[in-house]
Image (spheres, helix red, strand yellow):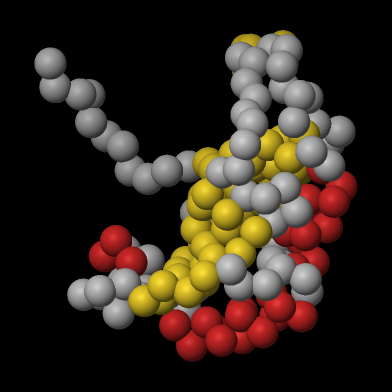
Length: 140
């Protein structure tokens, strides 16, 4: 059976964190994001035309009832991975900035065939974060 189609892009990436205040400080001060929404259980950041959502681990184990509908329970454990797309000329600035802010680059990969380069580092919860230059997957 064919799918209904119509998918345009990935809208949200969600990370579950042990200390929401600590993670907010990292993503706001080190990465430079601004929370568009935050409360005791989550913070939401616009990244281009997508959203990065940070949820306090365990804070979403119960459904959230709203007048307009119910958000089902969810949670996660273990280190996740996601990537930011950056301009090629920003790569070395990011490497220096991350190191200076206590998030050392764990690995650097130059992708065969595309010339894209990725920097890998960890956030305070051990999630693997990637900064990728244009060309990765043909879209970064």
